[in-house]
Length: 230
Length: 383
Image 1 (cartoon, rainbow over the protein chains, first blue to last red):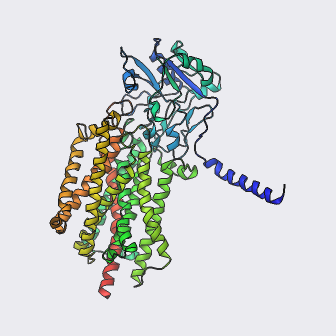
Image 2 (image 1 turned 45 degrees about the vertical axis):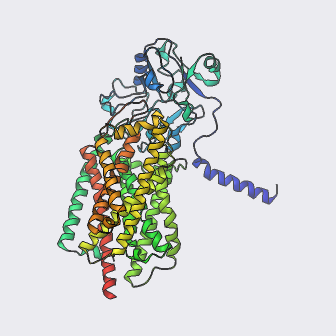
Image 3 (image 1 turned 30 degrees about the vertical axis):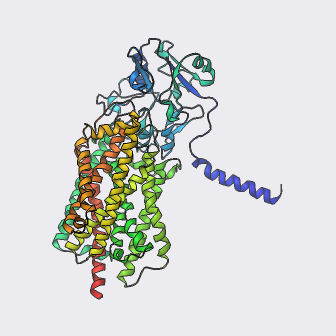
């Protein structure tokens, strides 16, 4: 290596170390991407799934609908897929953060308090969030909640293994990242009686291609990781 | 020059202390909000931005409108604007401060606001807006103050200032364009997802800002020895007329695309805003005021009459204040992504906090205009 090459490489190296932390959210598609399939044809106890999540994540039970915190909650099928098909019978399905491949919330966050991991999970750093709520405006699914008031007095049966949040930060479903670390499946999946299937997308390809699948608002290009099997 | 804000008539001090009282009341309510959380406002999980962000958006426009006096004066040597250029620049300073304060009071964790600088995120439009707004504040402080000091000493502005003046022109356009991009780049918010958003913002800015400037100039003429000149005021009124026509035209374009295409998601917010929600009354009031102002502005007889011009400037300002400072932001959130309607109306503390922020803006504006008026009248006495 001559001196010129050395300087070139050193220069590029220096520039990349300066810019690396500033680089935008991950653009490359993740190879190992986690996904959740929800089989809405099999009846299951939605409430049990919701309760499991609320308990695991210290989600406050706030009565006022304006201040509610929701990670996973029930909605009417016709509201969730209003632009797609009519179901013969009205059913209720769970909705949650879609952990998009191309998440608008991550794109707009001015502090990188919300970010996408390599496995596709869109996470929140509650200690970095400044509470500007740009992500709530950006999320096309209404999956994000803001702590309008101090949530702690509203938490029933707290789980000491998961942090509580303060007022003034945004929060949402984290695909149970803390449980995945311990090789446990997400809290909502356990009581679902097999209706909720969680795993790597690549390993569930057969399930998806053999059934008719819907994802919420696919035309927006966000590419959700939550699939509804109908 | 700064000493001039400390001497004034009884009326001046009454005005200043009234504003300070409003700031005090706003501060008390802000402390309550700081303690309790943003739940004290009328905002909700579904309508997560309200009066604060609406007002922020509106005042970015007022700030940007300074370019409407700076550009004709410096680029086209339009001498009539010479005396009001400083008013435009000082209005921009006060407006940008108001914008920044509205962002601050809207933050859930205001103590962490420096995280925007500690973790710079070029992918976020908010990051660029911060740069644009602070840069614009700096430019106007530099240009306004240097110009006025030069005038105070009986000199024309120094040559080194020219590049900054030239930069400030596209910079003014950029602050409002970037602010429009906050809204216009969000998938799933169809009311905002429109390529014409930045153009609409600029049109409304270039009508509401100069309208406010005309009103301020008329107040200055009444209460100080400083006369901005009839020609400047009627020159501005033409700018307001064209910009307001463009603004209403752009709104018409939006309505055409939404309702002729008939795509439901594109129509919903318009249907909510104008067709029977909590905001319907004030949205129609805004539309009515816009029509009234256009009639008065397009007709040269009423446009060139100070009384009618005052009325039309008030209508322009009020109409756009409602449309852009309130309806535009709230309307984007209703209905929510699941098609449900959650109403929004600002709470009492929210209104008082907003009043406090305006009062801070008006205090800054009063101080700056006081200095400008004294310096300018001194100059005309000497001549």
